[in-house]
Length: 354
Ligand code: ATP
Ligand code: MG
Ligand code: FE
Figure 1 (cartoon, rainbow, N blue to C red):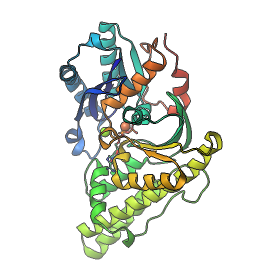
Figure 2: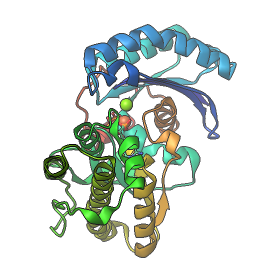
Figure 3: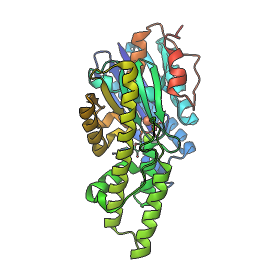
Figure 4: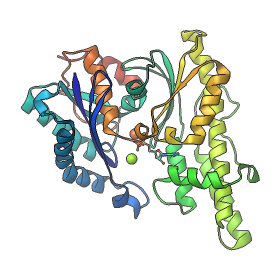
């Protein structure tokens, strides 16, 4: 089977076609970074307009790349939530129109389920697995026990990990989006020069908190400026290195607890430990988590970097996974859901097709 996936939940207009034998037949990602850069973050109204302007053309060239017509597809998937409602409407409406015209089912995909399942597009990762989902809007640890079956073990009580990267970058004048810029600066810096707080570390459970970290970064930057008059590149790099290392320490501490919680039900086997979402594109953090997996007797897996940040293949794949579980699926009645937590609602959606 072939499934088309459309992603418009934030500031990427993206689409891809994947097959059940794990081929990505075609994929396109149109980033809107330049349209939002001057505002230092995503402007919902601009994002929605850009999706409208570009999605049709993008799909046209995608189908050409794949050398397929809409009739050759077996299902059409679109991110239906969570995300910015304007963008979601554009993607869902377009997918439903193609679905109606071609008579193929529409599959409503949860964006986070897309991040969560992508690793299975490229590797043999079987259920259950423990997932660290770290993205621009989310920071969660989940037990993934099947397609659409998620149990949340922990979440952030304030900022997401990607948000912490983006805010740190903004504070230090590194622009938007911040993740890659902070990672590059950190590579040039010395992590040991500054000490930052590690919220939640050592506490039971596996919730996160990052807003204190961001505040501490601001104070550090102000102190450096007070001493030297400006924030030197060396200061900036050292702050980034400290920030990244500290965030890594927090992730590792929380994951350790999560592994113990996961093992209470899953047992002691060498289960996969998966990291996904935009922040999973960070090589340093990937390395830390891989080392933890080794220590804990888990098997580390992560999507390739290009599939960590938002893309169409992850949505096509999650749609395909649901289609394979339930070939009679049709979500034509589903409307965009700006809020759509994975663990509350993903479960009942399996097999809900008509
Ligand atoms: P969500 O998936 O929660 O709805 P989103 O879709 O906007 O949010 P993603 O595209 O999954 O987020 O990830 C984008 C985030 O990943 C941004 O916050 C960005 O700074 C971060 N990011 C991207 N690359 C890196 C990197 N190399 N290091 C750290 N963070 C990164
Ligand atoms: Mg984005
Ligand atoms: Fe995302």
